[in-house]
Length: 296
Image (cartoon, rainbow, N blue to C red):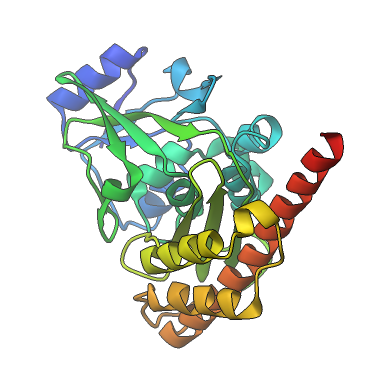
């Protein structure tokens, strides 16, 4: 196994072009586990730790450009207001040591359906900035996951950053695990309300071959909120709406039975998390609206 250590982003792209099978490593929280258990034995490892820009982020007027290697700890400490869903998801990642090393780029590169960042990224409508010596492109998060641990990156591409719009409404994330820490999700759920466009987005993890959105549930909830005037009147969402939303989220799952949980349990748990997330986000929205009216 050869170890490639580029000193700059340009050198990293050149190395990836010359060795398309090279496996990028930054935090190493996924790659090293696979290597240590002999599940993977790549010909080349591409160490990105000397590429400093990958650990930086920029907060713009409408969004955040998050470097691929920004540690989860930094997201929790510095971007909670702009990216609340992703900050909540970051809290659930493994241990403090791993949160200090791992980043969203690694989650995306591995593309495991159980990756903690995926539901939050789907709910926020993120875009993945991919680059090669041929140029750069933005891949909508909805198009990024192509199969079990497969993504839309070309063999010579690397993830440079993730572009995420600032939250314009409440966001939530929750996951079910077999213990409280250092655990792979049995299933996970993310929800984001977007009052500016009066839309809703979801993200489901570890309950299908890839991270997925519950599109029928999103469309149902957006229509119910609009038809009932909920965005304007700030009333409590009726139990029937919450129940139907949860049922549609469960129906969006296509899980398997494995050592962490059964398919039936995963469907049920996603429905429970969806109902709770809707309750929490809507209460936050109503509270914010009430405070705005009070100031006005």
